[in-house]
Length: 240
Image 1 (tube, rainbow, N blue to C red):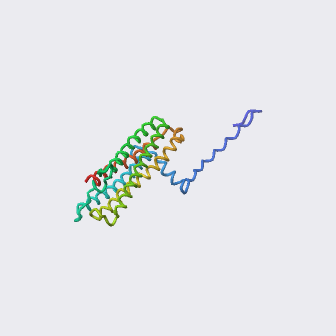
Image 2 (cartoon, rainbow, N blue to C red; image 1 turned 90 degrees about the vertical axis):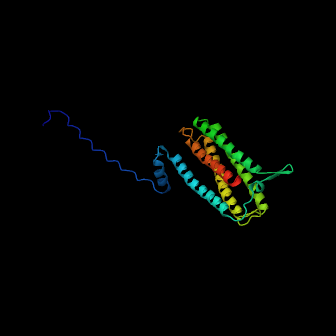
Image 3 (tube, rainbow, N blue to C red; image 1 turned 120 degrees about the vertical axis):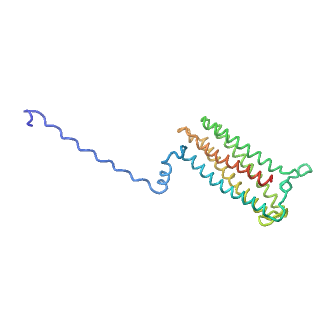
């Protein structure tokens, strides 16, 4: 259609914008972390908590196998099993007190579960100072437990207990004792380090911006599991 005399020519249509080029996914370690962190939830709970539950389930099978092996060995041995009340007694005030050290260790570890529960409560109230302080107290209880266990090991080694021999009775006593309590002590030691790292990050305010303190609950799940396993070890190994 012809334009009227003197009318300006229409502006040319703008060129279409180029299609966005998709970014290549990161490779190496960054790509691995991105893949695992992209799924924020699993089984209707956070991915971090789900992974901790899966880890604890696998650890349950390991400790269950150890305790089952211990019960099988003890029930099938033809040599008398040592009297744990005598083996684990302490000489206090001129008398041997049976299981005194073990009772104190159990009290310390169960008390640490209480302080850990209070730390989780403080974390969800965003009281990071008290949450970090209670986690450090929990770690101190765990370190005390490990120190008493080291004393217990030293005492038995000085008395001649070895993984392959035992002056108190069946030779299998030494191997099962060092294996089960040593594996649990390793879990407690790693838990102490884990709690200290998380407590330091909480105290520094790393989770204050997001307001997500679920990492404290995840650490608490691990610590409560360690305490629960000790209850079974105490019942099967020291009281049976």
